[in-house]
Length: 319
Ligand code: NAP
Image (cartoon, rainbow, N blue to C red; front, side, top):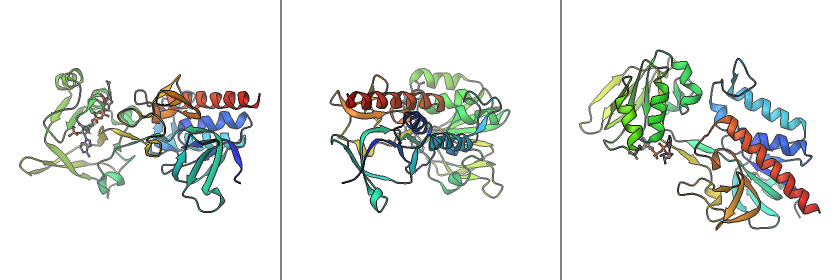
């Protein structure tokens, strides 16, 4: 019979590691399953300047490494493992991971889901090679580095409009590239972008290649007009993706309530539900349940809330 843990945390981004710190300090020896993107979105960011307490900013990977170390100091354990299946209705909750050996099946009294949301990318090899070197999926994180530079934003939804408008504070010019001529963005956001003197919208345009792989920094984009197939080069120093995020919740379909885009629905901040009723012992925090704020500090805050609820939950079960 497998050991029954007090708590397992799914995901090692800002939310998961904050939950790990709090549950570890409560003596619960949390096990953190690091998943397919260890460290979450901060681990692919460069300088983080809006996390309080770092007056000169801190590199995203360093911030994550510090959080990991801080939680480990109080007894948090980490395992590189991919979740293959989960039974949240079972008592204890059962997790099956891709790790071979005894770690394969994990039993736990409580589960904190902090599996995040992954930014969608175009999937071009040149784009992947230049992430963090001019290619970014986070305008709030990286916009500052593009002062007085020409940049491009890809997408036709509210995120792309919001990013373009935000980035226009820094950039000399923002070219918004959309693959169709109809936009998903709300009318008001689209109108703001259209009216903005620094933003140019180009429709029916896709990116075939990000230029600058040899130079290790974005030098431009090779664009293609989808109507006539004509290609041209656009000189920019940065490309921001605003083509949406995908919450990492596939394992929970049918087990806990998700919204129409797959984000976990929570009640009282971090409680998960099934058909509207609270699922005992299963909490969610961070971007997997937040498509509105998506900031490191808000993820950390909700990780703390989930940990405090776990502590309270286990305490109540003991009495
Ligand atoms: P979205 O509405 O799904 O829009 C994604 C956009 O990216 C679409 O225009 C889509 O093009 C494009 N796209 C997707 N994959 C692509 C690819 N491989 N290549 C090129 N283009 C691609 O996502 P979102 O903008 O992140 O918004 C998500 C939700 O959050 C929405 O409900 C939105 O209203 C909300 N949101 C609200 C605000 C706000 O109110 N301030 C801000 C941000 C987000 P197609 O149209 O051709 O599919």
